[in-house]
Length: 307
Image 1 (tube, rainbow, N blue to C red):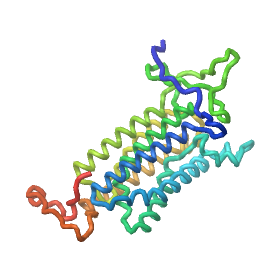
Image 2 (cartoon, rainbow, N blue to C red):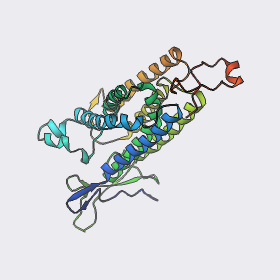
Image 3 (cartoon, rainbow, N blue to C red):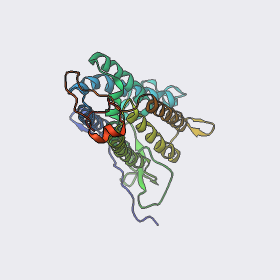
Image 4 (spheres, rainbow, N blue to C red):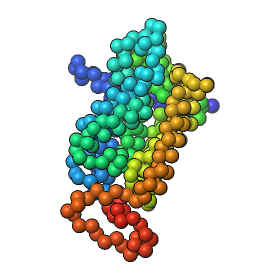
């Protein structure tokens, strides 16, 4: 017997005159703002120049959004380019469908362009951005809740998620003959599992960065490893249509490959570049390391203030 269930919204779009206000887009924008704020704060704490993150974001964010949509369309192409598909709907980003791997790949490309134009190195930027990106991903998952999407198999657990039959064009639940929204059932809230996982992973990255003074891209590598670990089991729960390879969803294979690659590169970075970069200008005097650091033999470049 179902004791409780998480309700889902019956509407994801509101109109302010002729202008549609879409919850999905609002959640993505909110996540970007949180990520930019936290990244700026962490980058300055590491000795970086204030204001650089805003310059980088003007390149990284648009590239990331485009990449996220391209990845989704490329890996779920049938609704757009398959039989009976509508190619123009590939441009309808507000309907949902954003692939995190495309966002990371293209966002990194945009950030690299921005970093070169700003005259700063990319790895420290990536390390500063890692927990903020995780928070942005979690906040963005709230948009899936508004759209009644990203859920797992049926369940009657107390935290089951109520899902409505959804009219994508109208951005709201289908109304039945009785005048009430049509309920499909209760399912595992995969979007919520990922939200909680990304928030917890962000906390782990921040803790590890402070404890071990991660540098040279290792905080970002830890982010990727933690996220892919969560994405593996969360993706396995989902029951929405997806392309598969050898019986496994494409995103499971992507998580395996990307996660293993990130782990290998993080270990390589730790061996080749121990310590953390000192981002302070050369004209700024360095403080003398505490005796404990000198005695422990910590590298000289590992002197910036903890994030």
